[in-house]
Length: 173
Image (cartoon, rainbow, N blue to C red):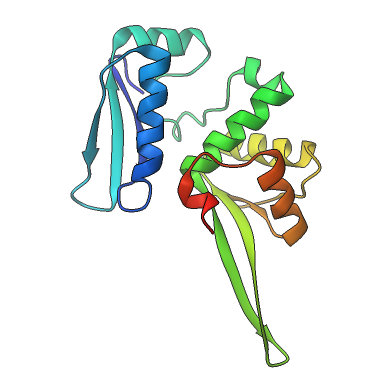
């Protein structure tokens, strides 16, 4: 986020439906123009909004200008203080920087497969927020390095029921 624009990054090949969802949110919340750009050097894409008024509003709500990783950003206090906001925030973070994956293995000649969750980020405050929030709703989450993981089948099911996803890619597994 800079003084004049912000972007929401997504995987251009797998998350285009989620990008459309984000664009609808931006239109409904801020009545602003946006554009979507694909990155030529990778599979990334960005929904970009250029509006100093929206930036001023986001700053007034506790967001910080600059590079989120260099600044080791966290969520605003008003989100941390309300359980329903915490859960909604984790949902959004997982939709963009997390995901569901199939864990497959073989034991005793028998094949097993089940879903796991992982959120990846280099901001320690965000990692702690995600892990703490998931644990607060009685789902066992583990923090290791730059990842928050949910391993057990039961806890993944609880995550889907309690937190859920808006990103269709994550709901389709």
